[in-house]
Image (cartoon, rainbow, N blue to C red):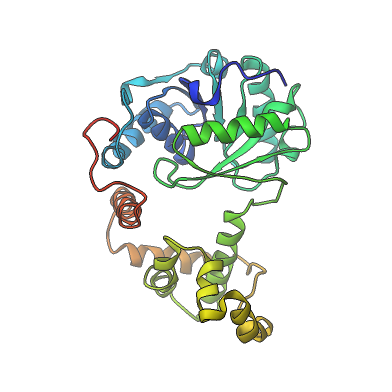
Length: 325
């Protein structure tokens, strides 16, 4: 892999390939951080949906505080993939989660992007080793896995594949930090990465409870938002459990609660997603939404994230309107 054409903190133009929920969220984030963004998506209505998503996200981004010069006007929609990456200094791919599509698209991006430009995939689970097989220069391909919505949730997990140049991983991690993300740089590949594996375990147990009639969708959501989720907003599960051990910390907690690990509290294998379970999940979410539209729920979610970030000291109480503090 050639040396990237510019330093991570000197990037000014980003290309976002794929403009759905995740890709559009990346677009909003990069625009809010003052980048010029060129986006491409093959859907015929992609531009309309993308600009609508950015407009909906902008009030939340204004609350967080915009970088100097940040504006939705710095978004350009390209007619072709090649045009989108022609002058990009970083590329974020967010296509649908289909392995063959990812392989083909990353190979096309590798062929079209300027030499040395790092190309990151937003994949939620595929190892880069499985996706970089058709690229001529796989050394610049890596995973940059965000959480939804990327314009609010700080985390991005960075991981290379077997053929990824370690220098590309180092560069990408530095770039994401310069772009105001919280970065975990993984030293090895792990299907599902770190956060998704933890999230998936909780999700599978929730599906089992609904499938077996043990809890409703609302019960499950309330159990997190009114319980451990309040602690997880500022302290992870490991430190939280360590506090359960009192002055003895994690050691005492493990000695005391270790035997419960043999108890049948969780079922990590996913239940069969049959029509009955699917209906129960869909109906349960409709009931929990209580008539609120998806747009209303997104706005509530965004404001909730901002409130938690501010309450836990990760956002200042006040920001200068239209610029950094």
